[in-house]
Length: 195
Ligand code: GLV
Ligand code: MN
Image 1 (spheres, protein in one colour):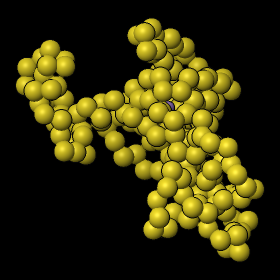
Image 2 (image 1 turned 45 degrees about the vertical axis):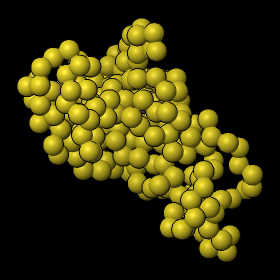
Image 3 (image 1 turned 180 degrees about the horizontal axis):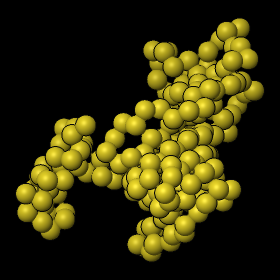
């Protein structure tokens, strides 16, 4: 989904002071073999949220060698019973392969049609660009999945965090009227998203 590259190499200079629709390239004379290798997906980062998932990202921000190439890769570690909650990627379709464990992978279309499948090691799934999707660990053990994207920075809109953990907060009245519940119900949900 990203624009085509205009040159062989454009390793991102993440610290550049100019900001355009991408990152500028660091000088070719500074490019080394290490710019084309990323160790960040060898192990999961620490669990950081209440969902029992760790999404470890290999996008242009963590792996500057991806700059302008229109690709990225994550690893998704989900604890037994944990969930990678409903989210969407505004700039990329996603393809994923289950390495270990058993997940329920679900998609909901813009017409609110739900598709899902239980997947195990070796199975590959695809998520069309922008559609809401999730993965629930339905196995007894940890689940490990690698996912890839056709953008160097796919972005991730995580629905529960967008609505209930925005900073500054979305006014409670917006949420009571959106979900047709009272303030207590909204505040109860919000209290769970204080990390
Ligand atoms: C999984 O859905 C991911 O976005 O890595
Ligand atoms: Mn995803």
